[in-house]
Structure formats: C-alpha cells, structure tokens
Length: 413
Image (cartoon, rainbow, N blue to C red; front, side):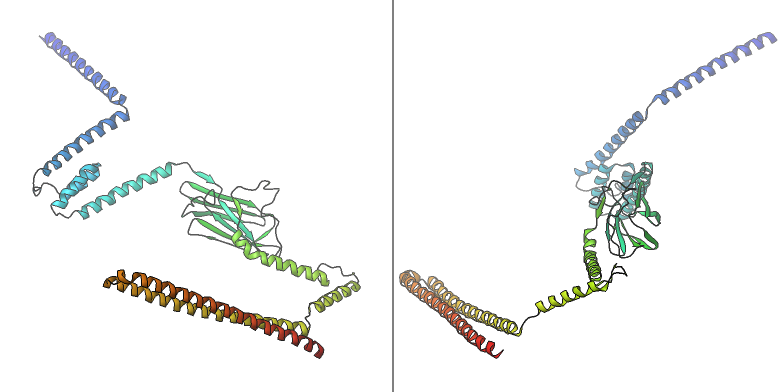
C-alpha cells in the first residue's frame, strides 16, 4: 500500500513539474513577442485607438445638431479639459460650441488646462534645448577710435545683419595690455571674442556694458593718448582681417574732426618751432617764417575803398530784392482780383442755368465773357510790363548814381 501511494505522489509531482515548465516556456515566449514589438507599432496602435475614441466623441456630439436643444447635463466644462488633456482638439472645438449654446462658463477650466499644457511644453522645450550641441560663435563687432580711446560695439550674432541673441549672459571678460577676451552664452550658444590689439590699452581705465538688445559695448583707454592706430588688430597675431569685423562709421565720423584739428595743431607747432624741433637748431630760420605770415596777413586786409564798394553793392542787391518782392505782391493781388471776377461770372452762369435763362442768352454771355477775359489779360500784361520797366529804371538810376559817386570818393581818398 505504501509503495502504491508513493508512486502516485511521484506521478502527480512529475505532472505538476511538466505543467509548470510548459507555463514558464509559454510566458517566456510571450515576453519575447512583446519585446519584439517596436516603438513605432506601439505608437501606431495607440494613435489608432485615440483617433477611434475621438471619432466616437465627435459622432456623439454631432448627434445634437439634429435636435433643437442640447439636453442639460450632457456636456460639462470638465469634458473640455479631458479632451484637451488627451489631445482631442476637434472634439474640444465641438465641446466649446456646445457649452456656448448652453450658456455655461468654461473659461476658468480652459485657462487652468492651458497653463498645464504650457508647463509640459516648456519642460519639453528645455529638454530639447539642453539636448542640442553647443555652438561656438565668433560675434560680429564694429570699432572706432578717438585720440584717447577705442570703442567696440559687439553683437551676439555671426553677422551684423543677422538677428541678435537676446539675454546673453557674460561669462568672462579679460582686458590686458594688448588683448581682450570676452565670453558670453545663452542656452546652447557660446560667444567668444579674442582680439590682440595693435597698440596697448589701460585695463584699469577701460569699461564695458551689456546692452538690452543682444549687444555689448566696450570703451578701451589707450595707454598712449593722442595717438591714432593704423589698425585695430596686431598684424602678426591676426594676419587676416576677420570677416565679421567692421568700422563703426557713425561713431568714427564724430572723431575725425578731432584728429584733423590735432594734426593742424602739430603742423603749427612745427612751423613755429615748438613741436619736435631740436634744441640746437638756430633761431634764424624762425624769423622768415614769421615774416611770411605777416605778409600774408597784409595781403588779406581789405582797403576802405573796397569795403565801401561792397557795402553799396549789397545795398543795391537788397533794394533789388525788395522791388522784386513788391512786384510779386502786386501781381498776386491782381491775380486774386481776376480770379474773383471770373468766379463771380461762373456763379452767374450757374444761376442762369438753374433759372432756365441760360439757353436764350448763352451766346451773348459767352461773347461777353470772352471780351471780359481778354480785357483782364491785357490789363495784367500791361501791369507786369510797367512793374518790370519801373524796376529796371530804378536800378539804372541807382547804378548811375553809384558810378558818379565812385570818382568823387576816389578823389576824396
């Protein structure tokens, strides 16, 4: 009996082991099949399910179009937030229309869900920006110089005409005797400006400032004040001119006059012997230069006769302008008078046409109008000729008097 019971137990145990092993094998096979599913298949299946569910939602909501009224309690503002959360935008559009017909307030629910969507979008955007590779950019800049300073206008872009990167933060700025290193960054963009100057600058007296429109300005003090650099960069350190370096013309024009006046002063000092002239140079050479200057001054002096001649010529020019102005005013007044007469005749013709008397007397009126216009034109021409003759006679008389006075004044002188 004992042997029979033991045999049955062993048989059942083996059967259990076989069944368990088969289940393990089946689960392993299912796991392998799931792992073989790609992400594309999962997303496609999910998208198909979402489209199907959104279609059912739309068909349910569109069923109310056949009815005159939407039953109360069928559509609720929470349905709008649920549709937005699932990305069912067509369904959300239809829900808004239904809520508007039911005169239900849904702005608060919409604003809350909109903020939630924006939070997720901003997080996703920050992840996308952080995943980007950093870009090392050499920023475009302009430069100008005065006798004492160098001015730089840096734009956080690869070209001057390209859009600037706003809100760039300064990372490093180092100014030494003849070098500038300026670093700034914004997200994945890193800007670096490394310049080796032609001359030396005073770092302690130099300054910089970040702009609000994606720019930065630097003012570098020259160590040798009053000197003009032939170039900004050292030709040995920078043999080729950077493509994004430009002259700041609008700023440079303000200092060109200072350079010219500075050079003029140096020339005058050299002529007077105050500049770089040697101490042992004899002073005899200064005397002829001073004599030449005094002779030039004498040549520039104007005689009293010439002054009087210019004064009288100026008086004649002023009188001529006054006469011309007077004639123009008379002509303008006459023109207004003629225009008033013609306007009056036009008003009469319009009145006659309204009264019905124009047809009977149109020929006579036309003839009278032509005669009147001819007479007015003749008077205007005559007035113009008289004014011109009067002006010419006045000028001739005064010019004759001027010529008579000149010999007399010469004798007096």
